[in-house]
Every structure is written in C-alpha cells, then in structure tokens.
Amino acid sequence: MKKIKQNSNVLFFFSDSKKWLMKVSKNQQFHTHVGVIEHKKAIGKEYGSSLKTNKGKIIYLLEPTIYDYVMKSQRSTQIVYPKDLGYIAARTGLQSGQKIVEIGTGSGSLTTFLASLVKPRGHVYTYDVDENFMAIAQKNIERAGVAKFVTMEKLDIKSAKKVPMSEVDMVMVDLGDPWTVVPQARKMLKGSGFIVTICPTMNQLEKLASALWENDFFDMEFTEQIVRTIEAREGKTRHSFRGIGHTTYVAFARKVTSPRDRRKTDAELEGATEEMQEDESLSSVEK
Image 1 (cartoon, rainbow, N blue to C red):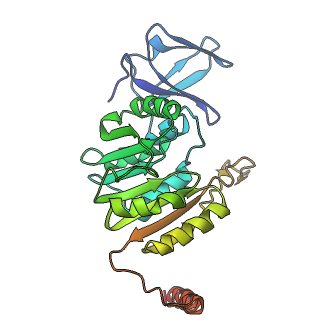
Image 2: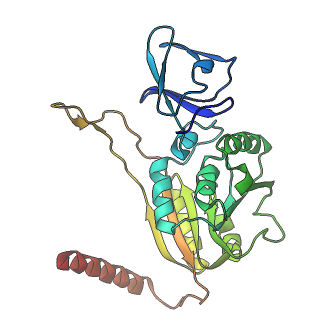
Image 3: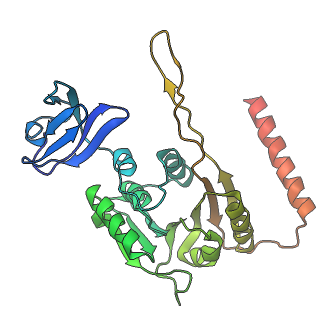
C-alpha cells in the first residue's frame, strides 16, 4: 500500500464541501472549524486511512486525482469544469502519445488535465500573453506533477509571424475571441486533427462557427454539458438543490485537407441537416 511521506500531496477529506488539498510537512498545522489538522499525524499512514483533529473529528487521507487538482487549483481565470473535460476527452479520443497545442493557458487547470492524458509519451505546448496568469498556471501544473509533460511559452499566436508547431493532434483554444486564431490552428493541425474551443457565450459560438466553415473544418459539433447531482440517502433520495449550471459551450471540429464546395446554398445545407436528423431517428427506431 502507498504510504504518505514528507512533501506528499494529500486530500484531507471531512465532507463533500469541506476538503483541503495540501502538501504534507511535518511541522505544519492547518486550522479549520472542525479542529487542527497536524500534518505529522499523516506521515507514515496509508492513503485511505484517517486521523483525528484536536476536536475529535475524523479526517480521511485521500490520494489526489486529476479531478482534485483541477477543482482545487489556484484560479486567476474561470476554469473548465470536469463535466466539460470528460466530454472533451471522449469526443476527441485523447490518449497517451498525442501532441497538443493550447492557446490561452489561463490558470493551467485545462493544461493539467490534457497533460495527464497524453503523458508519458505525449506533450502539451501551451501559449499565453499574460505573465501573471502564466506564473499561477506554472504552480498549478507543478503541483499536479505533470510539469515535465508541458512546455509553456509567452506568445501571441494572433500576431506571430509563423505558427510554433505543426502536425499536432489537437489545438485547444480558450480565448475571448477564438475565431481570430482558427486559421493558425488549421496550419498547426495534422489532417483529421481536432480544434476544440471554449465559448462561454452564444455570440462567441456564432462567430466561431462561421470561421470554422470558412477555414474548411468538418465534423462540427457545438455542445453544452449539463450534470445533475443526486442526494442519495435511504428513504430520502432526491436531486440536489446545489449544482453547477451553465459553465461554457464547447465547440469541436476537424481539419480536412480537401477544400469545401462553397457553391452549396443555405437551402441545401438545411436539407442535409434534416436528412441527418431523419437518419438518426430511423437508426434509434431500428435499435
């Protein structure tokens, strides 16, 4: 069993709403409303065990996951939530060995998640223009233990004379005006590679969709992930009154190397959409 050592990261868990992610130091104490947590009591214990505070409250010692690092990251900007991260991973087939470009590092929570999936053979190259954001992101990435799988650079992709990478598997864009870097993303992607974009508002989504269309991206999908938590207790199970509402829209598209037939009219495109919906309906009936 894995034991906790000096400088190990531990999630001190009291309840769903009261948990703390810290690096253990034998001389450190952490004061909470449920009592003092003495780090030295955790050293030598196995993950999954517990300790008591000076008030007799039980604190469980859990090994942090990427979910914990994302949710407990220091934030300078809005983070991308796990409900969105999971679908991004599934929709794009993220896996070890892939090469990812991220435009807009922010707090580094998304960078951390991407690196956790492409390691140990893959790599994330992330670019930002704000040194303050980058400093915070660096700390979050190092805390999660994925720093050697991430290269961070100060660079404005919009004004760069040439793109820094080529033949990448995915370009992740988290900017207020993502449509401005669609041409650059296309240059960096390999054929069939994904561009994934975080868009908090529908106005951004509309402009982005036009840019994707004009730059020959296909397999486009625009989504919003909704998660509803359940309070499961014997005889009293119900949906939770607490929850995460709208966080962002996520756009997906893939690069193709054959130019789009731009002679198609809006009517033809609408007809194609209707046919697709009918096909999906028939498919579900047949199943």
